[in-house]
Amino acid sequence: MTKRDLVVKISETTGIKQIIVKKIVQKTLDEILEALKRGEKIELRGFGVFRVKVRRPRVGRNPRTGEEVPIPERRVVVFKIGQEAKKMFT
Image (cartoon, rainbow, N blue to C red; front, side, top):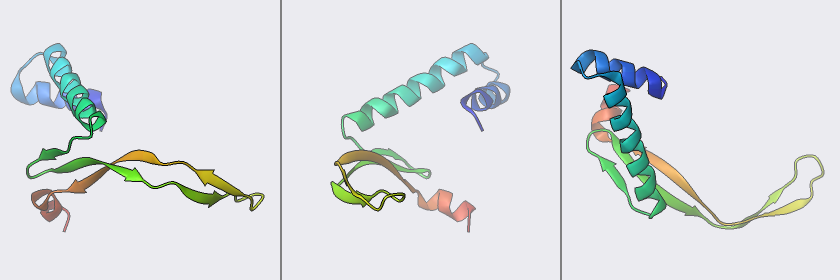
């Protein structure tokens, strides 16, 4: 499902114009990204939790040459599914 599909689906079920739904969906995503950028946790009850995790620097290996390559520390977004959503898949 794409963002466009999501907008169309919400618009059809609520009767709100697609242009308004698109702005709301985009603003929601922008706010989630900004919060994650600040290091905040996003908890959507029943759906799951997004948070930023710091991966330690490490030494990797080039698969072609076998040469060791330093991999710097980096921040990644992780998602943990909520219990209610998890029940839908088990």
